[in-house]
Length: 221
Image (cartoon, rainbow, N blue to C red; front, side):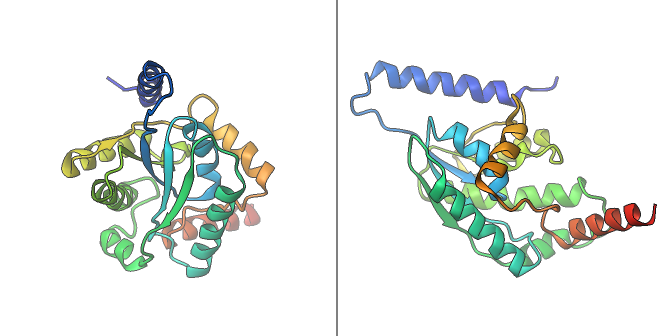
């Protein structure tokens, strides 16, 4: 039976709202969320949505981005968005270690696997495990990722891995499917509104090669 992860998130938010109401706003602590972000465009709607209910730290951990200049460009766009976007509760930024060797190691032997397969699943796990570790160390109430907003990412697999990491590290994972309820559409609107750089490949060398093949195919046809 397929789970509706977005409805699960909505039920949790409703529960949090009820708890806030019971305190009449006096001394109620806003739950802290560690949000793994893959890029500014994907985080735009997620921040607009979740900052109504959580105090968020955006954790930028993406060693899958092969090119260092591309990585820095995406980091700066993420920081710029956080600085410009109005939010109800605070949003801060935390950059993880940028070491592409971490991705190269988990991708070893899977270089020829098409995008969206086992290599991508290992990449999800690499980033979500680091997020879960940090959420545990710094005692965040929840952790999650912006990755489920992308129509090209496997939301079911992302939530499964997130739950596994939550159990492993003893912290709570926020289930999601952010592309639902026009989430992806809203992210494209916000990207235009803030003039965000929208990359056309995931970040790793393999996704870049696949993008280049698509461009070449269109040129030749």
